[in-house]
Amino acid sequence: MEKYDFLGLAAERYSCRKYKPEPLSREEVETLLKAAALAPTGCNLQPWRIMVIRSAEGLAKAKRATSYTFDAPCILAVMACNNEGWTRRFDGKSCRVIDAAIVTTHIILQAAAMGLGTCWVMSFDPKAFAEDFGLDASLEPVALVPVGRPAEDARPSGLHSVSRDIKELVSYK
Ligand SMILES: Cc1cc2nc3c(=O)[nH]c(=O)nc-3n(C[C@H](O)[C@H](O)[C@H](O)COP(=O)(O)O)c2cc1C
Image (cartoon, helix red, strand yellow):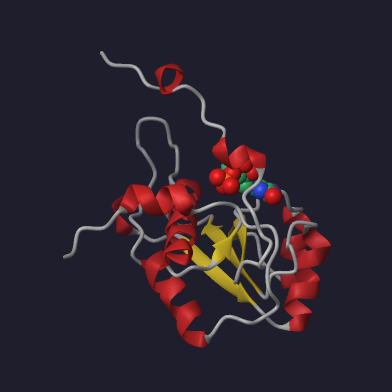
């Protein structure tokens, strides 16, 4: 395996909030899905599902659940399976939502590696989303990820470059 400049990729990725209308190719979508499938999950149970939303009808439905679609040509909805996933026996905590978050992280970083823009969106109405897309109670939508080619004038928001002092966040014992 080659050595990758992961820190460079992580620093380059930003939340893209303006896209070109050009659709993703099938290969591009499949590559993002492969990166999702490679994500680690508790006990490798893979308690997640992804809905690829790219039809005009689907994109219009997504807009009813969130104002944060940014008119991207594709949205990947990452969902956690409520009846699946590993549970910690000490306190009964399930890692299914954590697993879905790791999957989402793989997608946004893979997209960045392909020169595609993404934005992790949590500000959506889960009930409206579930109703519009006919999800049953076994699925919890965790993240909506608009994906596409960044518009020429797309830029990171000011928050992209704000980092808390690492000393506030890390302790050594
Ligand atoms: C869990 C999570 C939820 C987020 N939800 C939204 C959202 O609903 N709308 C949005 O525009 N950005 C959302 N973001 C993007 C963050 O605002 C963004 O990652 C943060 O400000 C840092 O900027 P950067 O991604 O450009 O580095 C979310 C990010 C995360 C990780």
